[in-house]
Every structure is written in structure tokens, then in C-alpha cells.
Length: 385
Image 1: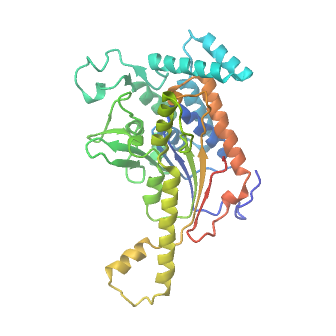
Image 2: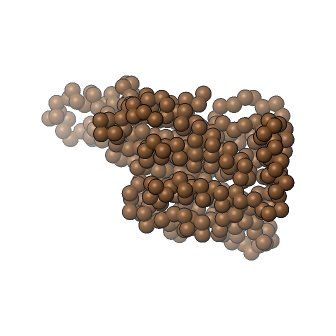
Image 3: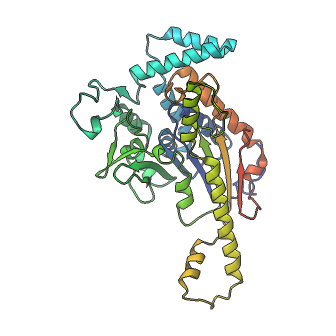
């Protein structure tokens, strides 16, 4: 990729390059492809945040040296999609469905693979509980269909938490405090991040159990908001930021005509977290901040020196700029409602390739790397549409 939009020193004209990763289970391989394409052109983020599967991908990125990140992401995704030895025929059928373009066959194969995941779990990630939660002794940790102990081992193998806590990259993951119902972000700027923080972000009930962190129990952050953009917006001081927001669910879609379509559509809407509405709201907030900054600049310094309202405006006013680049996975018609737990190798490769291709195509547009000159100081890009 050409260096259009970069400064003379070769750096993009933003203080922060942020990568924010949405939750979406098996769809998260798309984010691996996105990161591979960014790394190839040297766009290494210095801020990474995630929810659920996005938290796992974010931890692998932040917890490894730049030269190792893509390889570690591949290791994770190849591990969790390793097929059981007794289903080679299904893999053959999947490849045949892709080769001959049969969406019906492809859909049936995907559903079969999703069924395998329901029965077997995903290697290095989660396994079915030997004692179902209906008959298990009452405990918070046992009240789920799957045991996520394998994930802890995988994270501790693939993620250097000392590197995360050294703050080479700003890192944050979101989870819901069960008692308060509030979304909280575990941030390496103020906390020592451990495997349980990442696991808490992906503890989606009733499949996965709540995770205890510092005396409190947490569930998947996607129950409240499935994107960590809020974390990035709320942190002070604000800085000029280039954001790559990688979403796994598309809010836009058609009116469904059957019950399966209804289930799929409501799932897309629920987990898309109203990305565009949040971005529009953010743009309005930035326009108000920039207007306040210009008005305060016209005001003599000695005027209203002790007025608390003026002090409040000064604290919020600034001229920071943001480019928000949306990279949104758009599922194929044959993927169906099980697309977020269809952990087959063939589909993983398909998702990874889609993320890579979408990012390469987006990076061909030099305007995404240029500072915006709009009144609100925010430029948004969704070049997949």
C-alpha cells in the first residue's frame, strides 16, 4: 500500500491508532484477517480493546511482540477449529459445497459442524460439562453448559500478560458486573490484567459460567454493549485517533420472511450494538466540544475565573479529531443462526480471508489516513458497502 495520508516521517498523523474488536464467537476469525492486513502495511495499533471473542483476539495482539502476533492469532484459531478425527467426511463435503457453489449444501454442512461444536465444544476453548448444570451442585462456577478451563490454559500459553501489564499497548476488555448490571472495562492503565479478565469478557450465559474477578462475578460484555468503542470515547485526555472498528454483526438487513430468518435478524440487531447510531452520537458530541473550544478561545482569560460552568466547559472542550474506519463482517446467506458457534476449520479460513480482503480493499483509500477537516472533527468510513 502506498503511504498516502502519512506524515513525512512515515507515521499516520494521529496520536493513537486504535483497534476495537466486537464479540461474535466463531466469527472472530474475521478479526484475525483484519489484523494480518494491517500488520502487513505497518499499521500497528497502540490501543487495543475487545469484547468477548474480541477480547481474546485483543489479548493475543497486545500480549505478543508485533512480529509474533499474526502467528499467535493463527495458532489460536487453528487450535479451536481442529476437527474431531471422526468427521473427515463432513470436511470433504464442506469443501465440495464451496467448490460447486451450492448454498443449500454449504448451509447443511455448516449446520452439521455447528452441531459437532454443541456436542464436543471447541479444542483449547470450551468443553461440555460432564455433569449437566441441571443436576450439578449449586455454584456460580458450575451453572453453565460448558467448562472454559481449556481457555485459561490457551490464554496463558499464547498471551504474555507481563507484556500487557507493561503497557506497551493500551489494553482494555469489557465485562458486565452481575450485581450492578453495569458494563465495566478492565484496563491495563489502572489494573493488573490476568487471564480471568479476558475470560470474564466472554462469559456468555448460559453456555459459559460467570467468572470471578477480584471478588465480583462477571458475564460477557456483549450483554450490555458488544463493542468497546465506549471505552475509547470515555478515556481522558482525548487524543487524535485513527480507529479501526471491527464488527462481526451487521445492523443492516432485510425484513425476514420465516422463523429462521427472524431469529437470525434479531441476533444481528442485538449484537451489532447500534454501531452507526453510536458513531453519529459521538460526532455530535465532538462538534459541541469543538464549538465550545472555539468560543472559550474568544473569551478573555480573566473573565469568569472561578465560574464552575466555565471550568466544566474548559475540561470538555478540545479540538481532537477522529477517523473511524468500520470493517464489518457480512455473513453469507448459508451461514444461518449458528454462525457464531460454527467452529469448523473451513469456515474459519473463510472468515479470516474475508477480514483480510476487506481490509486490503479499505486500505486502498488514502483518505482514511488523512486528518478530517469536518466541523465535528470526525470522519467515518464504511467502504464495504
